[in-house]
Length: 174
Image (cartoon, rainbow, N blue to C red; front, side, top):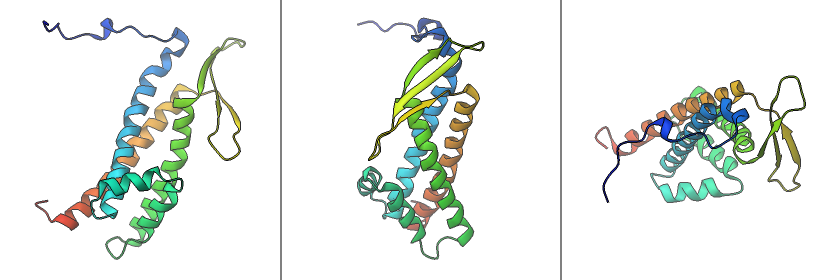
């Protein structure tokens, strides 16, 4: 089978209706920034567990993942200054809150809002909690961009911690 020339953006038209188009770049950035932050979190948890990535995945899939990760960071010995530990714990707390906001954007039903002077989009979802609740939201492009930027920042904080722990565990050459 012969290889074809590289595709251009024009070869891939938008598959969603026009009223969603303003969100496309913001959501694309959110998806990638979140995936990178989530990978950095997994890497950091792995380092807290002596480099055991499979154990880290087990922690992160647990119902009480946030609590387990918080405990791992809180139990860090003298390898971290108190202000560093506090910053990391604050970052983790914000990460989990923003992860829920991201989940609403990714998993809820999107629909157009035509019944107003300024049409927009709405989201309808059901929480994944012990007592599920119906949720409604009217996202703005700017808030999606800001959320993507937050995940990029979380990635940096957690990646730095992972790097430092790995260097400490394996030495400068590891």
